[in-house]
Length: 141
Ligand SMILES: O=C(O)CCC(=O)C(=O)O
Image 1 (cartoon, rainbow, N blue to C red):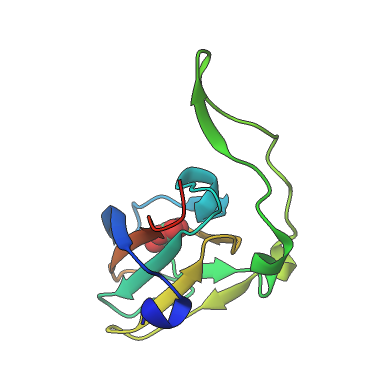
Image 2 (image 1 turned 90 degrees about the vertical axis):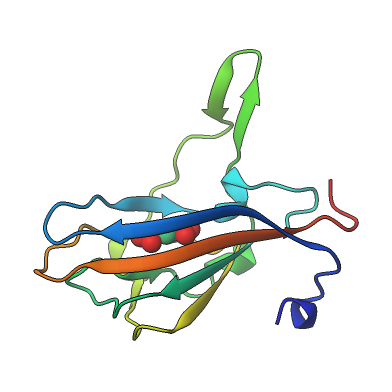
């Protein structure tokens, strides 16, 4: 699948088992993965595998359709002053986001510039997912 996205030398640079337990889990604030997992040029893709059904009430992903076409808004950088963003947080309108409700076993492929987020799990059901982030190390630094 990554070959069809023209990846030449794929490296998994982050893997996260994300478990949102009923009623107690946190949210993921709106972000672009390329802000954190930056290559030059940007090449991050998120592979988000639903291990359980993800719904609005148990904290599914939300995304702004087409937002990946408008570039990276800011970078998370480390320098002599520590770690920080190079620009303030943009503000997004909640009504621009759409919920990505998916069944267990679904793979959500996330462009590195796609603006996405998720909310708390307010349901009595857990929401488990495996999230891998890959970059292309061929021709990217
Ligand atoms: O699973 C979530 O709630 C957030 C995951 C996410 O933002 C990511 O994998 O980039």
